Length: 257
Image 1 (cartoon, rainbow, N blue to C red):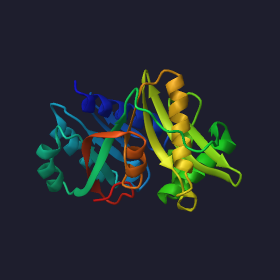
Image 2: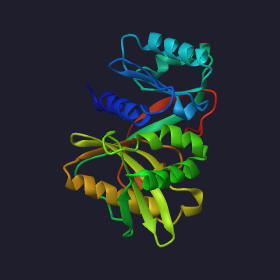
Image 3: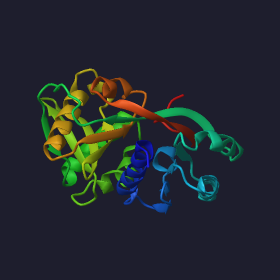
Image 4: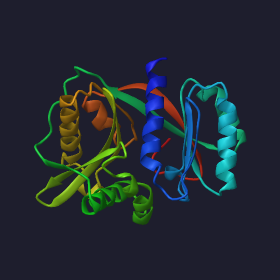
């Protein structure tokens, strides 16, 4: 199993941990493919990941059919192992190509220059979970009630996803979620609202979180980058190991061509 395949599997596990509390959550998965649907009519909350699988085409076909049956949009990410083969299938099923999402890795031993010192707290309890949800909604231009139903509910002490908030004297500025699995951790929902960007808060939060998890024995970090975050991650030492092809049934704010 190569590294891309391994990390796609970890992405699948992280997706399930984040979405499982959402209303109407429906899960279908194989060893390398996962479909997670919610009741929300937004593609960013109805996710399909396709990796190398003997029945990848069948899984894609059934997933699109299920989303259509529920009247839901869908965001599909395809591994480079299967993207070329499945592209004509995706078009035939009514999906639209939406660019790519770089799969990036920060390896053990890669030095990360610290950002500015900031106060960082874990989002636990209704008040702090609400603060994190506010930051996510503002950063991704997502309806706050949708974020509450699909993301806030997954921020618990036992969900397997840990969410962190950076503070300045002006209040909460940025949030990020981490899904640790052994000596590897996934980074997701890096959320700095537009009004707080270009102040170094996202960098400060992420570098401090990385340093903390390295102190706990995490050696490798991975993430799926958006266009907005790509420069930050590259400057911290993350390297792109694969480009995941993105396809959309409906509309997404997370991937740009």
